[in-house]
Length: 157
Image 1 (cartoon, helix red, strand yellow):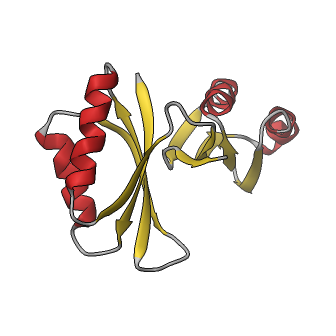
Image 2 (tube, rainbow, N blue to C red; image 1 turned 30 degrees about the horizontal axis):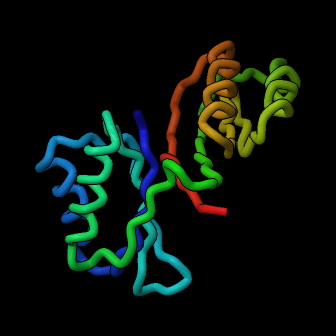
């Protein structure tokens, strides 16, 4: 099962490497990782989506993260009310004659065309995992040339 964990860390050289090596040393797979500065440039916010078979493994991950010197707090969103989103950029085949058809599909999702040039369109979308999955299935009809995903980010209510 995938679990979303946020980690506030000191924004220092090597912190990301130490967090990543903690996961790899124990054989835990990171499904996605998003990192950015907070309002305080000295602190970064990491959102990590990790595969954990059971609560015991998840607890071990959180304990190991809390042991790292540069970690300020660890939050597990598994049992917390939260909102999560993912951003994607998708390049699809879209000749000018199909642009209206594409726009009709995008209107059903939180998505828009950010550039249409020649026979390609670049689409930006933000949403929950299910919304993103639905959009990508709909876009398969046009032919996806390229897909870039940010990974999940989350915040508690």
